[in-house]
Image (cartoon, rainbow, N blue to C red):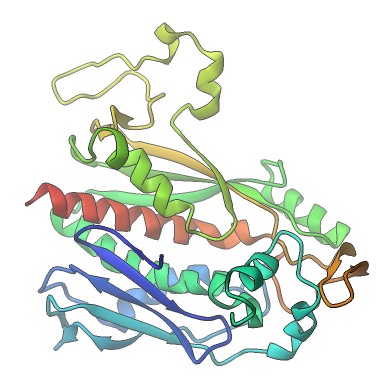
Length: 329
């Protein structure tokens, strides 16, 4: 499905090389100040072509409001925002009809949609659509700030290609003429106690569900994460220090029993190497039914992790905004 959320509900649409991509946000509260300038910082952070290792494709990415904003304020009606696709080179993808890229959605999309999918630039499976998520995140961050101006959501890259030295990890990919992945950590501060529900709507469940919608995410861990498997219970348990719920450590990552506990929400995600790599690979030619060598042409990120932090912040903010709106019911 292309929708997510309960009150603050997102519906994403568009393809990488179609006229535009966009998002509809249902349940956006009325009265929030909103104009194109509010999106500039986060949209710029997501763009490729501005840093080494990212795709040279550049789009203006100016938000166009189709509904839900009037006189600079949200109206409470569905908020529809689109971003035009102006810098496309669809000819780069003609060969992919018969030679699907390993690791990409080309093959499975063709099977699922009987060949009717828009294959250009990855179509609806493209990271291009993350601009819509970032836009929703701008609105969600406004909701978080309205509830408590001290709530902060920030994500940073901690590793590229296994290296803490990000420049070194990226340069290794450039030298190898190949793609690499990375790890991105997200921290949310000053959340109230009580967001989330036991079991299926736990805060971890909802965040994980949304985060895995970001293309290239292959793993997630909260707090101590997988390292907890090597710890004793007495070591992993976070001692409660006062009536506010502050703990001496934060191995739980700010969530206990599926519910936020007032400490920092901390989690990390694994971003896989970009599927489209200039390195020669082998794949099935679905027309000849033979294995052949090929190298992906076109404009692609060598390390998509470079552009993930702002997307991860946005998706996290959207989940938390929904949980805060639910808590106010």
